[in-house]
Length: 98
Image (tube, rainbow, N blue to C red; front, side):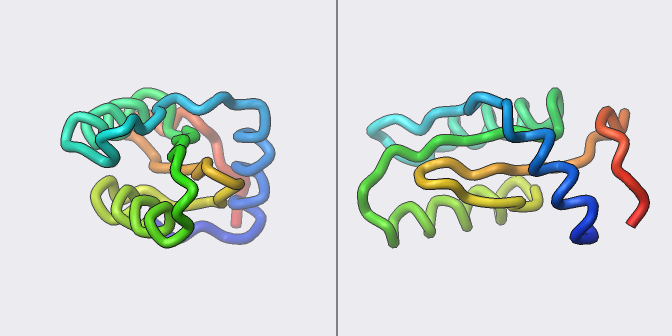
């Protein structure tokens, strides 16, 4: 899914007040965590995921894996948190026109 800059800015604004829905634990990105992220995206469309690691490269790899596995759009990363968007069948979030 391609989003225009206007749509990305709109979604970032929507995500600002959100709390992370999924927190990665000591085991990192497991199958169970991916299932949780998938479920959260289906329910909310717009979510934050927190990855508590101090290893910058590890964090980037985990962020990339989440995006690849879920098919979500990475809107932004802020510190240890990634903001993801994936439109569901119901299209709960009405995006502005492009």
